[in-house]
Length: 209
Image 1 (tube, rainbow, N blue to C red):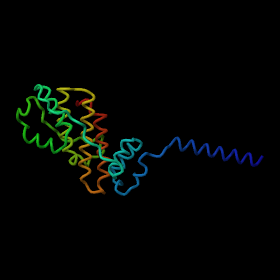
Image 2 (image 1 turned 135 degrees about the vertical axis):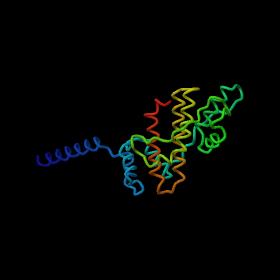
Image 3 (image 1 turned 90 degrees about the vertical axis):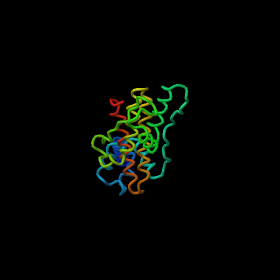
Image 4 (image 1 turned 180 degrees about the vertical axis):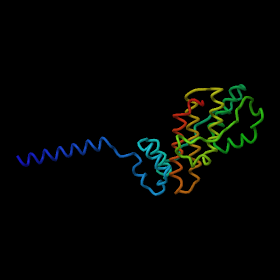
């Protein structure tokens, strides 16, 4: 009887421990959260908020070289078929392209009616998502400028959910490219902030598109 009671107690304890572990599963990014390069308050806030998000895990894996870098989305070629089609293709190539490409286009055409009329080159920098990643607003400003161009022109000429998603994905890739140029120690925190900014536009950017 004693052995039966002991067995029952052990089974009950095991069941209780199993239930507890199921109720509070470890964060997907728990293995990264204790690393010294992610101990600043901003990174810890992002890890706490998005710790169960596979997207943040993928961002950290990319930061540490455990996953290949994400490429920019494909943009259409200028077909020369008609003015409106080429203008739309140009908007996508600029709003979904690299920071350096946008900068060259902005320098050449902002304030003019070239290369197409009706383009909106205005920009207003970055807004930190709900107070996280405040220290990266200037770092990410070049990517935010590209994103502004994509949003402000595509909402006029081809306002679709698919175009908004692609513009946001290009924004995320450009931010990570900015992060990749940093030192290995600064890179993980920057990638974490980039993911928070990406989530900010995915969740709260619909009214601007």
